[in-house]
Length: 301
Image (cartoon, rainbow, N blue to C red):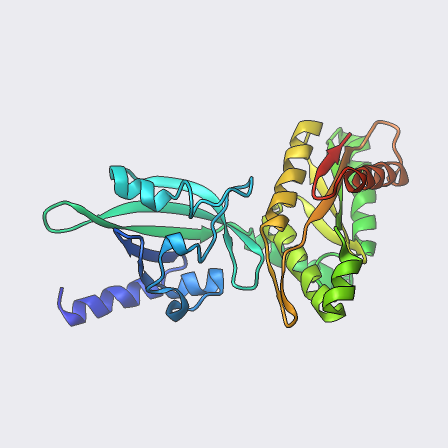
């Protein structure tokens, strides 16, 4: 390939919406397009030349398993030459987790031998739904100023609507009540500015990793609430565990240092005769049970 043709291909790749990078046999990153920069926050110069095994992006699955160290799709594709597609959560430069769809394919030399692999990844953050929700929040002044999530007023209105919907049409839903562990100690040790950075990082992870038809908001202080539609108690527990594990795998980069926070989670389903206060109170009590039993855990009931 001559220089003009190579330049054309790089221009084409740089203008794609999906993130693209490719690696050699040692999983050393050789190319990183502009969409990869946008989705991850990492500029090309910070990534090219590093290895996947250096764990730069720190891909994890929904259970928090670090795939760059074990179970890497690129490594498996280079081993057997098969195409792979999966969903993972990458580490954004700002510290929060971003859900992406990953497709891996082998690269071959002129003799047909595998000498690398390419990964294409797409942001699964439900951008259109979030944009519409953001416009609604701004219009109604129901956006939390610090985290950008729905504020308590919005969540109270949404919760009342969900209760009414469930009464009229039998649509089940659950409430997850989440509280950052040892938040007072974080503020005391690192300062309130760092505490605000932790709140923003946790909020970003929760918002990015929520299903498009669920709503996550800041209830107040270090407390967050998620309203989860069409679930039974087992599914609610799995979603709560997903939030818990992804927050635990996120990093808040603050002026006072890098802080890794965890959340305790309580979850419950709306019962037939529950009021708004009933379902909230039960989720709150289950969250405190998670605190009492060691924190960084999920309790549903």
